[in-house]
Length: 214
Image (cartoon, rainbow, N blue to C red; front, side):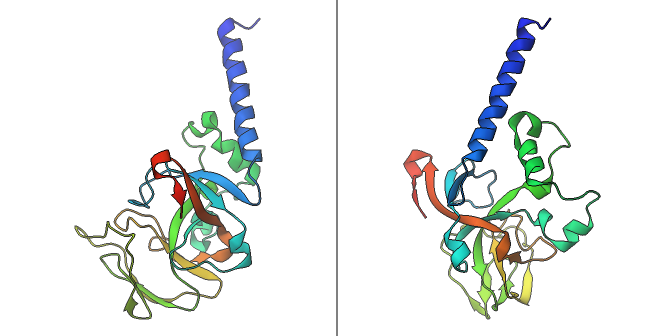
């Protein structure tokens, strides 16, 4: 016979799983909520900001320079990362299961291939791009204006990209916090396939004092 505490824990756990499943199932083909887990997009996006990601427009057109996009983890599509795996890629259902609050807190269960990243598009298909040690971006040898970048690599050099052409069907994405962002500069393949983009940042709904459209 179960004790009161066992019954309470089981009931609480079932409710938690049901709530997580309900929230996940509410995600549509049109939009979905996301939160910011890291400081890679500071100062514009703060840790724990809540956003609405719009998922329709980028299925009909190419991304534009300056747009903030959410995309699948490079560990799920970069060829070198895939070659390093000892197990098949997790399915969507496995990723959902591992994202449940109780499960995700267990060490060793998280799979980086299930993550989603948020970065800014800085270079488009067909362009020659270079990123210097300060984190500054040059397109076709001309420096672009990036007023959203305030944290460059002033104290130590950042990873560079030296005059690479963005392949057709790809873009280059970087974090606004150039001194602390895992982005195209650190992936073996450098560029993001457009097909891996989930959507674009559309509206910040939390915190209320900074709510607004992008």
